[in-house]
Length: 127
Image 1 (cartoon, rainbow, N blue to C red):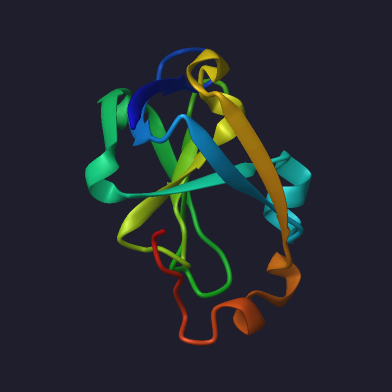
Image 2: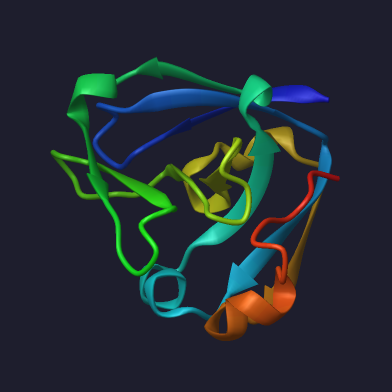
C-alpha cells in the first residue's frame, strides 16, 4: 500500500488515497461516467483523506440521490465522489491521481447502464 496524491485540474481540491501499487479500476458505461471519462478506484473512507478544498466542492445528485457527486467549483472536475455502490467509501478518478506511484493499472468494464443487476442488494463490497 502507498499513499497517492490527487487533485482537481486547478489544484484547489487536493487529497490522498491509500491504495496498492498494482490496481484495477473500473470504466463504467453509465451516462455520467461515460461522458466524464471517469475511471473508478473504489476505496473505504478510512483510506481517503481530503487535504484541502472542502469549501470549494459542490454536490450534484440525480436518480436515487444516494451518490454524492462532488465537483470543484472553480474548474468543474469531479476528482472523487461518494458512490451509491459504496456509500461508506469513495470512488476516486484515476485520471486525477499522480500516476507515477503505480506499478500496474488494469481497467475493467462495468455495465453501469444496468447498475441494479450488478448490485442487486444496492451496494458493492470493498476488495
